[in-house]
Length: 146
Image (cartoon, rainbow, N blue to C red; front, side):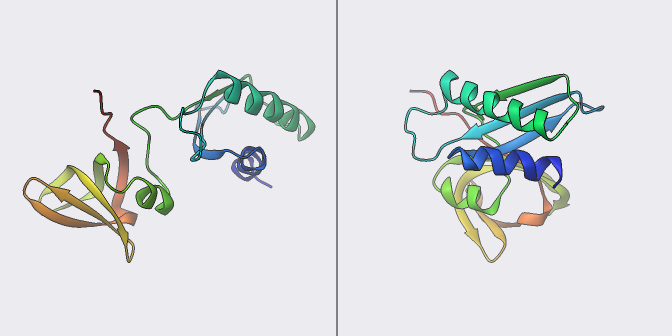
């Protein structure tokens, strides 16, 4: 089992969603971002500590060599990566960047309408656009402050 599978299995087994994993160039720092869809208040320190403690034990048993493990919430500007993310956050404002330009542009900002047939549907000031999910380099929620 590779490291990503091992981490994902452990995190989901605890009832959380693994949003993203970042590794330092030499793999010495493992940085995880977790979420829990049914938790209205968002991820807190206790959630991070629970996942960190369990994962530390699993990584020790599996003899994974690393120096530091960091577990945190994805934040208000959460990354959208999986198809399910684009469905879950429909109605939210997002920023996204394409790998290859479409109509001469790579950056798009608008309200996410969801995912249809492998295309991310976005409503922008200039109209609606459909973008290939496979061509998305980065997508993030735009934080809302009241």
